[in-house]
Image 1: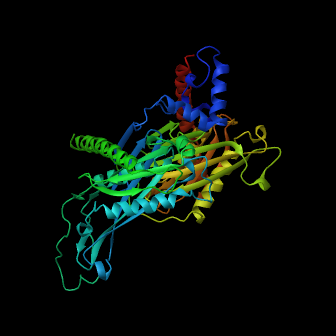
Image 2: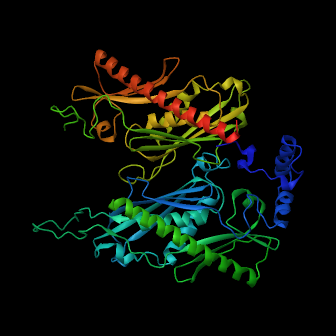
Image 3: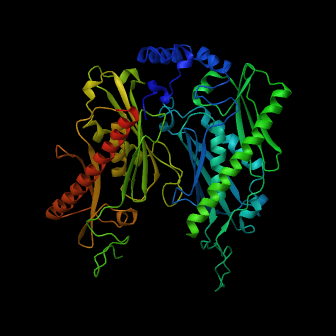
Length: 311
Length: 242
């Protein structure tokens, strides 16, 4: 809500003069931060701290809230610090194609509307949006989180297509991680509400049609994927970078793990820092820890929601 | 269909004809933006982010004596009952963007910020009738949050006429009933109308009643917005230690 010049409220006297000097010292710090971002950043790294006073291996405060969008079949709002994602699923019935007549389908779309960042201009969508969209689609499909056969209603005639739309409401780094958690959370919340569907061509001569999906049921999820993006700068590994850090660091590694701890995907799109095996192994260890944390947060929000429903 | 129950006088969602839906406004929801707000009118939920005053993107449009105001309206794919893949530049979005821009321009003191641009981005998360009004109310809050100087608080509300009764703040079902829909936007303290839109037919005297009802709704929203802004300022003050 404050303008960007205020730097989000952090005051870091450690970077320059000490307590004395007051307002003048603060202006110096802010100017230094803008004019020499890399030096400012490295000064922090020497003390093993980041720009928002986090330790290097510590992710930001994460929160998950389910069911915010009433008109959707499943929805979730996820916040990683200031990064905010809204995911919503709408289920519709479609005729499956002949070669996969017993499977449903999932369509994933990721949007970055202009509200999310001062760098996104209307008329020209953000460069990273289609990249993240494709990454999400690939990870969700390849992790096997959803068994497409579960989405089948009548073999060859009708199946569900789940449209998953993810909107970034505030972009402050780690967009892929937050989007993946929001997608997973939305699927966890998604309930097939047992609506009645008529299939064309079946009505003639039949007075009573059996209801195919009588009870409300939730989608069964196996092998839920969780991811962690680390930034590599010289010899430091920074977990869950913010947008400011992302503009300074050039090399990122994203590791996606599933519930059994298997690696679903590793993504390192170039960058000046070369990742030796040791660094990759460390990223995977950090990802394991983060996955456990995210799983706990997700389970907590699911049980919080069930309490709300039953009360 | 019975939009107003003849026996009890209640509408389909249990409201009385001159009752507005529950409103809620919140400031500062998008940290990256200079100013932002979330506004809810019943089930209609809208987020507005304001970026500016900042450098004009298209230098040819830059004005030497006032700020340029731009607005973009977009609806999320899941915002309405059925999921529709919305094209960015479709007619309805362009029209509403224009309406919001011109309504807010009437209030922003653009001559104080020459050669700059103020961007108002509107994202509809849930649509249940009255989206235009919710957007304008949210834009007012977001502009105030961004500290952009304005002449007055702009608020907007809609009203309709079904079953021979003027109804305040139509929801989606009432709006699609085919009756007239009057949307009014006013500058509350100055008591001036900046936006007035109506479709369908209404006799003149009934139109005056319906418009008056909408204006009352706008004034009620203005009082609420004033409270929200005051509360926000108090919080800022206490955080600053003042």
